[in-house]
Image (cartoon, rainbow, N blue to C red):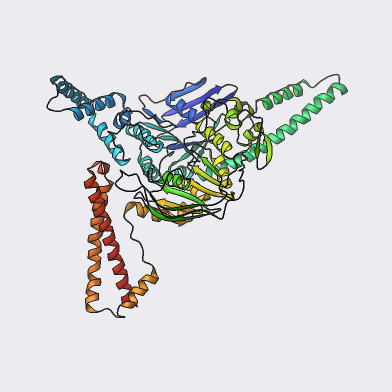
Length: 631
């Protein structure tokens, strides 16, 4: 046991977040905290860390235990270097390493004796505490996550800032790792890397996540937070879901029986006053105890009840593009290579790929927020767009939920029906008292729920959802899945949540990171194997059978000696061509590659393209000769 909370009590206002709660964190276990938004999951992480003190109860931990917590929100953009920020994970050693790196990068023949002496002094201090080991760990994490340590935080996207914060947490080499929504803003490739890293992490991990595939892969135990009570569920996530559903069913039955008994006792006491001069004092005391128990009961808030105002139907064709491309004039290669696409009414398309590969760019092209570099784009008729922004820029943090949602009005309208704004907020699990809370006081999940509530008020037949699942509790997430899958309009979805994509998408657009976009029918699982292979090595496109047959028919029905010799030599040529492609691809994949001179970058990319084409030609020739041989 490394951490132990006993009879932990913590309350903000009238409602306790922790109510005499007990939990232990043991060695080498991976605990997932689950519960509704606002239940206190992030607060519990801070209690474990020691950043928040309990009102009462005990927090016990083993001496000298180092705890690191990844916070829910990414760091703010600034001029601070990535290396310096990550090095803060080890305060004293990290500060020395940062100063050493600054000095070595600026040192030259004109450097003063004072600077040289200071560098030697720092080097000695690092030697004494064996700090170079930590320097290697930082560099390893930065390289694995493809982060440039010399780059500033300024200008990084939310996904990259999230990676930097994660690198800081991982490089700190803590005894206990606390992770608050670690997969937010990460692409699927990085999530898979993180999964493998955490599976190999030797210490205990306590994490919060909405990503069900991630939870299923990582968690060895589930701790549920419900109305201040912590309940531990050993085993996997699916076993927890079944057990929790049964637990709620039994609780509901017990509450119903209790309420029935209480009503009977209340009727007895009223009748007894008239019928008897004496009272059964024991029964009266029991009734008072029941009244107290009922008044202290914290009822589970109702389920979410989302509705979308789908407005007028759009035209049958929503988007049609021919050879659509986009790139900036000074860039060596385009962000989007020429592509053809057709989006029909009712399509639900998930855009999948690494951060910065062009997903948001393509959406902006389709919404005419960017002008294409080439190609044609036809937009369908009667298109009304509702856009969910992952950065929640439409919310004013200083205004209340009520003002953000309805601008102070008491009524809203959805699907032609007027509703009181308080009732509508309750559909999204906001208590009426919460309506007057400023947005800046909401949890990440509550902000997302408010954004969804605001989004669904707008009549729309095209939903653009940019990371809608971030921070949502599982119950709201599953309802959103159902809502999106049954939505009669069209959906463009940017998400790295594999389960959510599987349960909602009819098509996947896969961005390969080299400006290309491929379209597939189905969800993430249907294309996962292909995507994995595509990201590991260049893809050799299969030749259509009809084309192969036509080419084969031009040859003799029987292989000549010359063709047989050519076929025998092809495997060796294919192997050499694959090796050349892999060598060039490894150069391109190096973190510093695109910082090289433009001529070097362009020549290497041209060589890679030629090598890939040569490999494809050899493969096509091998397939052609094999088919001729077997005909």
